[in-house]
Length: 266
Image (cartoon, rainbow, N blue to C red; front, side):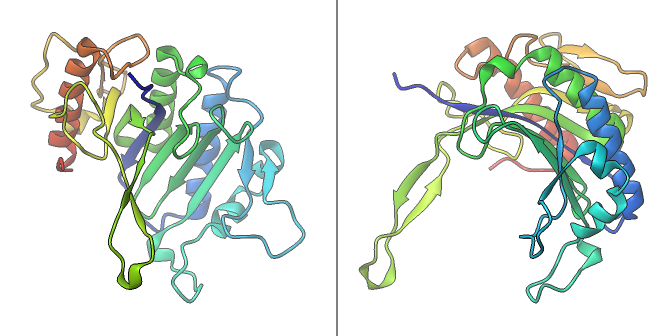
């Protein structure tokens, strides 16, 4: 049986204006990196994106965190959304991010976009599986809670994302070869597993407002953080989407997120 590769990440959404003041966004961003740095030595050596655009000057694209700290408002402002004519569009928000590690499975990146009020902490890279030696329940739960607290998240989730994308040939005018990229089923052992933006949830956080009226099941590990929200976990081991018992609990988390967030399955 071929190896099935997964990437692991933490994602979430908060409530707020797309054009939130850059100084406010910057403060949340620094709070996040400082909180992550206190969780584990893994989160060290952060380099902040000075500008998400290709730099046209001779300045480095990344700045060490301590250098960026006193320039964070300027850095957030440099990440303003732009239209097709490269004109700033504050209504679509700002993007800010930081990374550490060499490119590959041990690379870690955190970013937030005020345009749709979302954040993500990714381990590995697109179509590159995460290094499983850095994927632990302790680290991921702590990171999930730290980021959710910094951004006052409505919901957040740690999840596994299948990385082995496939190329599917498509017809193209003129006979030129073309392909589209498709994702195989998220869980091979369960073809009916709901397909959604949440992929295969491992740990989820719901704010106090989202928990109201939620019916809990004894199969799922739950924990109440001090803010009145709820943490739900499929397993305290590393999530393995090839294990039926993990998949069964992950399905419950996926269905819970779909119901609480308003996102539909595909």
